[in-house]
Amino acid sequence: MRASVLITDLEVKTRIGVSPEERATAQRLLISIECDVVHTSEDRVSIDYAHVAERLHQLAEHERETLEKFCDDIGVMLVKEFGSEHFTIEVKKFVIPGAASVSYRLSTK
Image (cartoon, rainbow, N blue to C red; front, side, top):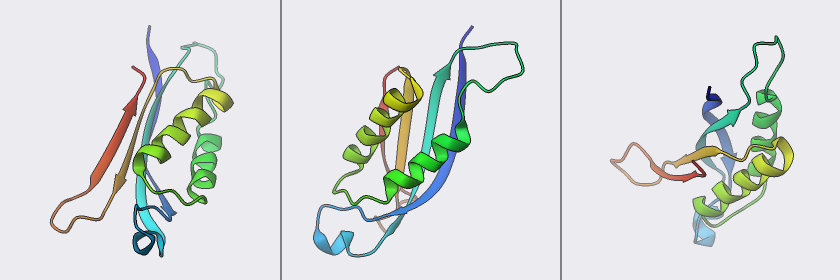
C-alpha cells in the first residue's frame, strides 16, 4: 500500500531571482510537497509535517537565484532530515504579468 503526506501551497517569502534587482525585495512563493511515507495502522505520525513546514520557512530565509536551486535544497532537506526518498516538490513564483504563476517541479517518483 502506498501512502503520502502532502503540504499544498505553503506560502513563504524569499529573495529569489537571477538579477540583483529581482532579489532586492522578498517575493511570495507557494511550495507544495508530496512525500511518500510508510503506511501504518497505528495512531502515530508518519512524518512531522509541522516540522517540515517550519524547515521550509527556514530554507526560504536564504537568498537564491533560481527556483531549481530552491527545489534542490528542499529535496536534500527531505532526504537528510526526514528520510523521504520519494517525493515531488513544486515551487510557484508570481513574476509574469497575465500568468497565474511560474513553477518548477522536482520529483524522485
